[in-house]
Image: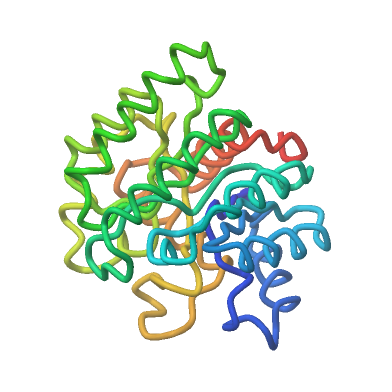
Length: 269
């Protein structure tokens, strides 16, 4: 059986309140050896940590999503920093910019992103980046942060983070991977009109590919319109294997090794 890591699933969301144990067991049954739950605000981050405490193969990330930037205040950074000492926390995220929904003003989003990038540098934790229609602003911010990591001689220069649920053009992936960022591939890679994403995938170094569901969102084509869950990460792996002319065993080994390296998941090495 191949071994997969779902590097981005929101198991703390209400969508799983009634059957979380079953969802996790179903994922394990389908070869998922580890899962990472990113927080979207302080409450969500705390719940992600609670779930990670209960299940040995589940880890958490903590952060404030751009759509939650209105909740950011003078105490938020300190609360995240205090929370980050937990042994099951492997990243700062989900953080970034979202100019599609714009549930928070752009200046608030940018402020929260910069503060959390500073925290990640201080704690030497990789970041999970959300980018929706904000490439023109987010890439310069990440470039500046990466330069700062270099000045600090930070180990994060080799593993700064991941652009999650990638949907941009190949040149954006090139810019990110040049700075050692990983690229998270999710359900839309399986959609009929996914030529652009598929072309981007072909340009990404295999050593930089991660697989994720973004559950409960973005289900693969076979489950469109239904709740997504980590077990479906195998369908993304199968599509990636097809696109890259690899076996699913090869793509699972590659992506799992990449996840283990980025998030320091020693237990699955």
